[in-house]
Each structure stands twice: as structure tokens, then as C-alpha cells.
Length: 122
Image (cartoon, rainbow, N blue to C red):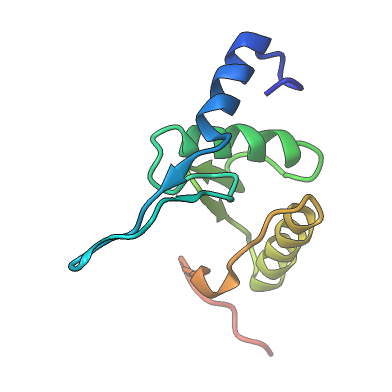
């Protein structure tokens, strides 16, 4: 946020929401003892998708291609390509670049959709 020129008071306000955050696990048998949340993005926070997009837009600035080939939405990424080989290359580029910046990519959740005629090898 600082790199994007967001004023310090707002950066501090957002950081205070995440620093020292605690939660409990609710079950049929009652709540657990509270414990500190040690992940950087809180799953149920309304602010998390916005923060994720801000961070992804900034860290991907140097390697993304641009619309309509890549689209960030909440915590999802849509990558479009003309060929399957190009798609695999772009996905691997994204994965490597994002992981080099300390984030994780769950490739098991990756879905591929083919539109139009699929080119068969000759």
C-alpha cells in the first residue's frame, strides 16, 4: 500500500486490523480457546479481497501481459491464451513469479476451459 502511495494513517489502520487478531473455533461442543491468527489474509474479512488485488496488481506489474489475457478478481486469476502450450507457459510464469514473492499457488484448484476448436497434433 505504501508503494502505491496510500497515506500512512490508512496503512496503519489496515495493519491494526490484522496485527494480534484472535479467533476461536466454534463446534457443536462449544468454542475452543482463543488463538492468534498467523496468516496475512483473513479468509472471512471483507477487506481481504481488496488487499489481495492491490498486492497482486503491484507484484505482478513486471510480468503480467494485460487484459484481456489476464484478469484478477478477488483471489482468482483468469489467464487466457491462444494455444495450450502458451497457456501452460503463462500459468507457470504466474506461479513462479508469485511464489518467488512469498505467496502460494494451489494448482489443484486450477481449471482449464477450451473455447472454439481444439487443435489436434498432426
